[in-house]
Image 1 (cartoon, one colour):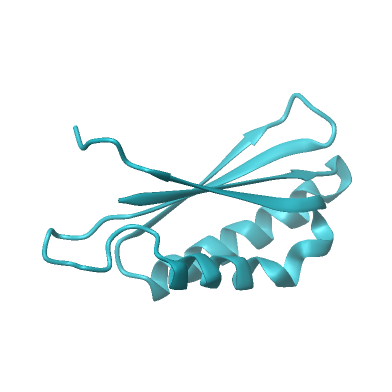
Image 2 (spheres, rainbow, N blue to C red):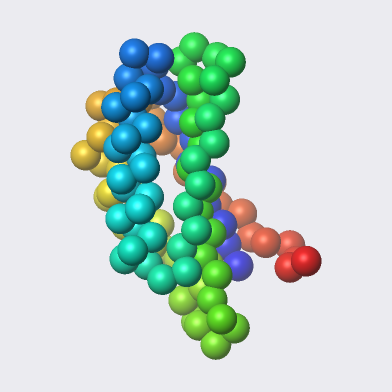
Length: 102
């Protein structure tokens, strides 16, 4: 099962606006994609701040759509486009396969 990690930098003066935008985006995505789990981690000890969005999608075992597939990855990227002016540089996207379930 694939999970997605997206990191980027947010200048301090845009932190409040970016937090609102990312929160709204992740809530909207979770409503559209059953089983999607979205988190936001922030490393605030740097300037600009480094943010990481983490996406995982769990199924009930019979759900062939579990994990982050290409369609969902594209939907996440498209949902982030409207607020791209709030970040410095690019969104860096990395996908990892779950080695095993605990």
